[in-house]
Each structure stands twice: as C-alpha cells, then as structure tokens.
Length: 79
Image (tube, rainbow, N blue to C red; front, side):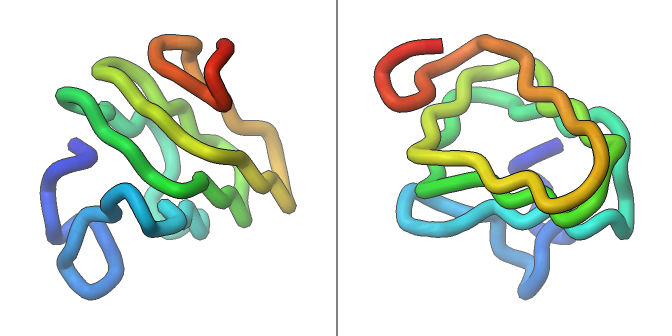
C-alpha cells in the first residue's frame, strides 16, 4: 500500500512536493489507497503497476522497463 511508511525510503510516504521513486527493489502492483498527490513519479526499473485510489501528479519519468499507471486520477488536468 502507498500509505505504509516502511515501503518508502526514510519510512515516509511521499507527499505533494515529493517525487515518488520506484527503483526496482520491490516491483509489482502498488495500491494507491485513498487520494494521493505527488509532484512526480519516477520509475528507474520496470514491472510496476500503480492501481486503485486516486493519484494526482505533475509528471512521470520512466528510465527503464515497462510500467503502468491505471487512469484513475488527475495527471496534468487530463488522463
């Protein structure tokens, strides 16, 4: 789950001003439980699927592999 602090570096889930980083240490489905907002999402490995909940973000960087963001929230005003 997105809100489980232990899933994140520094044991703190990202907030509106942060970049949520997915580095490949634990790929698979990431349940974005509830409504979340982050500055951006950065994938440096493949195999992630962001699903569920609502996610508002300013941008996405994908430097490696295939990743999926299910269209369920706001991404620069449109999905």
